[in-house]
Image (cartoon, rainbow, N blue to C red; front, side, top):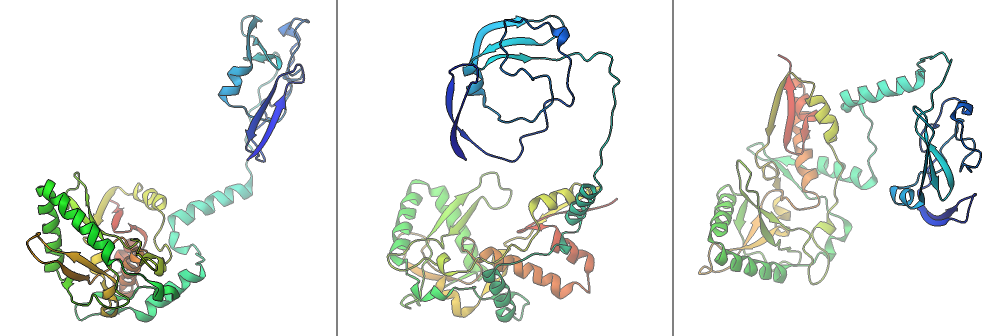
Length: 375
């Protein structure tokens, strides 16, 4: 963007404007010169552009605000099938069509072979995104390497991962006081809205019953981090109306937040546009999602003290400290860990079931599947 001004070569009109400078606006206004003798433009008219009937590039494109500002009240009608002359602060301008007489109409098609080749290449890259070459940043490469070196599976086959932590983990602050204040404010909200309280308790009870969080007394460790939590209500959901979100970005009184000590990791799935384009090709549509995808991946026991929360079902009970045992939504590295684990299932099973693995690798967007088949 640049600040500049333009002025009329026919008068004193001058206007300051902010311009966006680009190489090209569009094609020429006219493809070939036109004969305007038959228009019989009055000699007393001073045209803003005496060569308006000839082809040429567009130098500047003005907005509607300036357009209406430069219009004057006078107009001249040159006749049927002829342009209208309009007086402006730049001089008179012509608007409308010009009839071309005794000219043979020629229609041509120009095809640039290189452009066509590039377009076909782009099309096939969308069709086969797995062949695209992706260049990761140094931090993203570190996340991928760390996942390969530290990820294991337990006796049930579930993934056990470690957080890709930065070198500044020692600067992690504790948010116990912040988490406690927010929890007390949440309990006040429960008193006003008993229905919300009931849904919240149900959600957290399921969390405990599934083993995704367990009570702990380890809240005096120097590197402990307490995650504040709050409800997100989605009334149009067919399954879970309420979801509890744990805030890994909560700012501690001293030090860094948990998200500031985590590496984010690369994007591993195809972009949504490519997935939808392929999805629309299928005669039979197939949609699905992975239930509790993040919570299907466990955090290594040595790092669960970084995921502690404050909780009690009612105000009559003492406040307890729980640790979250699985990958937790709301953390910087959570999406990478969950999606990388999903992709690992493809790597481990591609030889045995290549069709299913192809779908998992190419038709998932986070935990949502958009795929299909032919009749």
